[in-house]
Image (tube, rainbow, N blue to C red; front, side, top):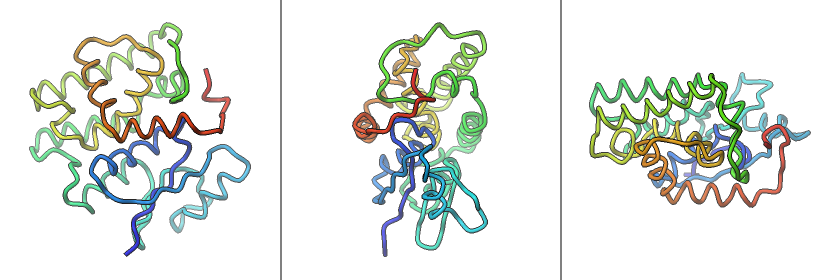
Length: 222
């Protein structure tokens, strides 16, 4: 049986690609990756070759191929991975913690638009961002609140949001990189969580790969 294949975009810029990639790597799932540079002349056509039936024209990554199954959307792929590979720590086993993990993951999936636009992921960037405006600061404060409350209320001794590294951590990993890249000041508890995520060998591999990419997308440069 062939290994699953994860279609991703530029590691330097594609935060959505990072999420399922990191979940699979941390859980030791063997897979092949196909990287398609984004926003190039032939990017959409190349992605379309991997798109699920009925998703035409489809120009977004990531996409997971697992045999005859094709899954798109970062959160959907993470959910599928947690079901497909039983050893994966996807959601917490405790019902209340699981509900919270799903809620904060969905909040990340659907929200924080100002953070995405004003602090684009760019692993080659180095230097502080301009002082956050009120909307961006509100989103930063909300993320810090989520991290602090999840760790304090469900797993007081856990290094990750819900003990083991899981889907919620994968969803917030690109935010960790944004806070690092743009040198966002954080309280001690949030900084501890940032350090925990950054210490993951898989994330360090992603950063190294990202920094060696040749493509430059001007819209994500600051």
